[in-house]
Length: 509
Image (cartoon, rainbow, N blue to C red; front, side, top):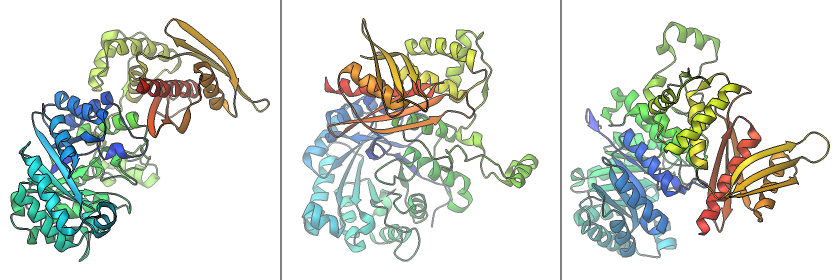
């Protein structure tokens, strides 16, 4: 049973497990931006990456240790000497640091992936924890695929890890197999470990649940009720396969139902929406409209009887306020006659931080858009400013795009790109307008790119809505995400494609 008012630590793994979601890779600058937003959210721990995975991951962890002050910064490491050494090196400058080491404990993993006996797994876990402990005081140990592991063996390996110096024990439902309740459910598993592992009350017990069967949040809550004191989660629930426990869901469930759970977190909930939008914009992974807490329809009421109740008293159909999670989308009162100071003040109010150059470009663009779109929302402003930040200084810059289309001949597109002092102009056809634009860009640059995904959504409603387009290009198994925003869908599509190409080509250097 949960003790009254027990603090639950929030361990955010958006930058590690979340980034493993197909197409959700981030560059160093983007990871730092997410880490800074996570700090504003007041998460307890940020898992910044997997240091040995790549030089990029290593460098991003190092950058994050210098970009944030409050959270513990964590690096993942397999139960291998090289991994743990890399994790320690990447965290060298962190003010508060943790090494998170893991090894699989389920029969299928031990036999077919590790090809190790249970005794060898226990010995390896102990050696890994001891080595990590020689670098940092704060060591987390995970039993990968604990959800399908033998409970007796889990007791054995967890006991050994605690004796070796682990300060946090993580019990992951790695493949989303567990059910929350029942004699063999996830809550029962945590309760069993709490009862049978010696000195488990001296460490934090963490839960890391995947959503393959749709039970990630429910399993995490079951773990908390059984005594877990840390939850591992991601913004918008992004992650491997069907994703992880969404931070926004678990935090608001704890806040709204504190009466039943008897626990709390330290999360600054008004920062939730900003975090969700930032991760959406960076990854291009659009949140479904009916997603709990952060979906576009989460606080929408269309049925007449619901609207009537809401007009009388919002408590009739809302168990939390939109404002409590940062959904304050006020109408922007700035117009084409507004000054630069008013625009800068609005960006500050929206907690948008961009370079002076991007801000100047965004202000000029804002004035142009005001001539066309008479009323701009905060989301419109955010989309315009972030688009200018995304484009930045690039090898290729979209100058103009013009498309001829209809129900007759194939569509054709004429595109002008700027490459330093050169102006490149070309015209090509395609199966559709976007295809024609992309064929033209390919011809101008002189190579064809592997487009694996194209996503478009409107920032707000109406025919004059700003369109945001996200594209993904692939090269040698690596994904490059490009973004573009404009009042015209085709212009946004062209900008996103050129943005992705610039990132892809930069990676070759």
